[in-house]
Length: 450
View (tube, rainbow, N blue to C red):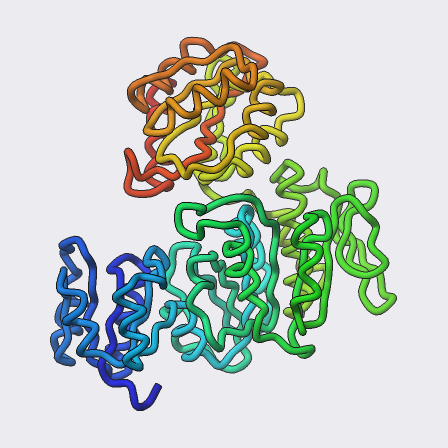
């Protein structure tokens, strides 16, 4: 990177701003580009200007003509024609996590998968804190990885949540421990095919050797086969099978078996989080923690104290005997399936809909038919969801015009032993800035009802 002086950071979100700040502090001239006008923090504006760069809106081709490297924010597809032309002229195009990797000298656990990334990464981050070294958490979890690794030494450990978007643009990225949790259809509007989506996910271990660890979900029929693509040392985890070696569940307890040594960590009934999907997240976190050097005792301590992450089947409150749950993080159909399965007795009033990702709906609607007493649909996706729900035989459906209408309808109809669950199966961009804003708005409306 030493011969690279002028860099364009494409996308002025959290990750783009973090990358821009990092590059400027390294002495680069940085053009922070976005196709919509943005008001930058005065500190960042001043930093960019000090090195001769600045914020650029529009005029992509001209900006690309000035630089030797482009760092992509996750939301920017790497196959844009302008980027293709820039590559042909010798401009290097990388993702923000690749930049972070090149600047980092310590150890890393990287976690990807369609669902469960944030919970697993948060858990691993908490486990890493028990080590006698500096640690950090970053990536897709909402903090630019290139900022989080700053100032860490060679003994440090970082837990990184990485998405398929971020993995699209890696070259040298090679975490010590790479975990893939699962794979179900998502982001088809970007990747177009499941094959391409899977290829991006597998980039997480593409540069590994036998010195590094690849952790795969044995229960996912697709991910289980990916051992053939990895040169890393393989470790599987399973809820369903007591593996000859790996991390598994038996009689409700979590075990590690590695090189003939067996350790029991804890029982699922001791946890504060629930549901089969969370059991998988715990198994993956145990595997990651184990290879990072966390002791079984410290893992147990961490797991028993863990309350889950915001917006993932997050308990809000109970009104008239009816509990309300915020699952705004469920931005795809598989997340919703996992959320519905977490309530074994059913009787769910489900709020779904938002910005449609155009993924297949039939498996989700079949489970909605079995598990819900009422389906409330909203947002851009409501018409397509309504058609799919009626085709699947879902009987009680209400279509509403606003988010507040959805919450008010749920409140008016809900009676114990029902539960009210916001689990949209969609992204939030039709009504909100992101899924966090959507989840917080849901919680505010629910608390106002109380």
